[in-house]
Image (cartoon, rainbow, N blue to C red; front, side, top):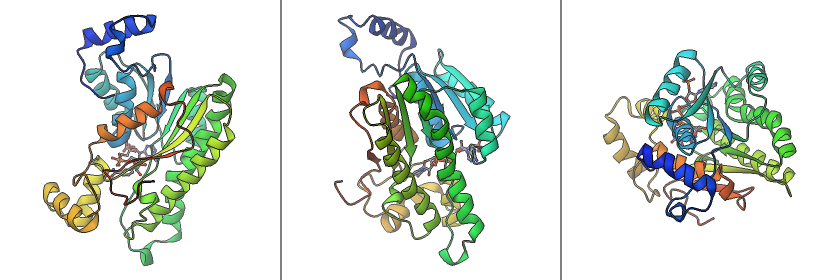
Length: 290
Ligand SMILES: NC(=O)c1ccc[n+]([C@@H]2O[C@H](COP(=O)([O-])OP(=O)(O)OC[C@H]3O[C@@H](n4cnc5c(N)ncnc54)[C@H](OP(=O)(O)O)[C@@H]3O)[C@@H](O)[C@H]2O)c1
C-alpha cells in the first residue's frame, strides 16, 4: 500500500514479517510480495508508474516498460530514488507489436505478476474514426495484454501461483460517446480477463480486471488539453465533473496512487479469493452497486 515509510522501519518490518512470528508484525499489512517478480506494461508514467512504484515498495522485483530507453531509464531512477531498496529491471519497446512482446518474453521468461496496464485513449467523433484506428486501439489496448498473458500464463500455472491484472476502465461500462473505439477495447478486456480466470479454476493463479475512473495521469492531462482547447487543468476538472461525469462521487480526478493501492493488493497473495472479478476504483462514477 502507498503509505510513506521510514526506510529503516520498513526494512525492520520486512525482517520481522519474514520470520512470521513477530508481535510487531500484526501492526502492518504485509502484502507478501518480496519473493515475486512483476511486469507492468506502460509504466513510465501515470497509473502504470504508480503501480510499479507500489509493487516495488512492497518488495517485489519489478520490470518497468515504456517505448524508449530514455523513458525506462528515467523511471528506474525515479523509483530507486523514492524506494531505496527497490529491485527494478527495465524493458524498452512498443508492446503493441508481436515481435517486441516476444523479445520481452525471451529476456524475462518468467514473471509471477503481469499487470496489463498499457492503454491509449483519444477523443474522436465516431464518424471520423477510420478502420486503422479501430485496429490500432485493439492492438495496443487488447492484443498487447492477450499476447503477454498467453506467454506468461503457462509458467504461472506450472508454478501454481500467479496474478494477471488487466487495467480496464469505467469506460468498459459507461461507453464514452466521445471515444467509442476506446470503450470497445475496455469492454473486451473484461471478457478476456473473465475467460482467463475460468481457465485457471482450481489453481493458485488469479485473473482480474481493475476499472479506474477518471485519474490524473500524464495521458489525461493531454486528453484534457485536447477536449478543453488548452484551459488550465483545475478549470477543466471542475467543468468535467459538472457536465461530462456528473455521477462521480469523488468529484475530482483520482490520483494514480489511489488506483495503484487496489492493484497492488490484487497482485498480492492476500487477494487469493478475488478471481474473475471486475473491480472498480472509479470514484463512484458508475451508477450501480455491482
Ligand atoms: N487516466 C485515466 O483516467 C484512466 C481511466 C481509466 C482507465 N485508464 C487506463 O489505465 C491505463 C494507463 O492509463 P494512464 O492514463 O496512466 O496512461 P498514460 O499517462 O498515458 O501513460 C501511458 C503509459 O504507457 C506507455 N505506452 C504508451 N504506448 C505504449 C506502447 N505501445 N508500448 C509500451 N508502452 C507504451 C507510456 O510510456 P512511453 O510514453 O514512455 O512509451 C506510459 O508509460 C490505460 O490502460 C488506460 O486505459 C486510465
